[in-house]
Length: 136
Image (cartoon, rainbow, N blue to C red):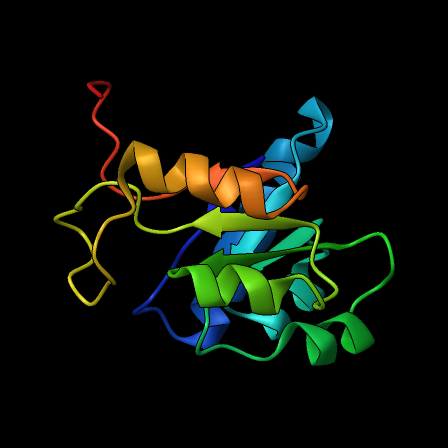
């Protein structure tokens, strides 16, 4: 899976970037996941979208997307994990696992113990997001 995150480009430029990236990934059967933007995912035929807690609700995104397009949802607290249990999502992004210099408006880091806690709360696949440096 390849995640495409773009926070500053115009919609036109983001769509062009996402479509080009999707074309590069398709021969290798690597799914493109668009961060935050349902419109961009639809425009370029992405295989997935990843939503944050302040993005479009997953239930509304599911209504707009084809059934085969998967939806990921960031969770920043145990309450987020519990709420996600009733959402039409395919995986959870546990964020942030470690402190990250690239995004400063995050909840306190989960750490590895928090990641283990989330694992006990859900059977959904998990993606660890944030601050990974190769050292535990």
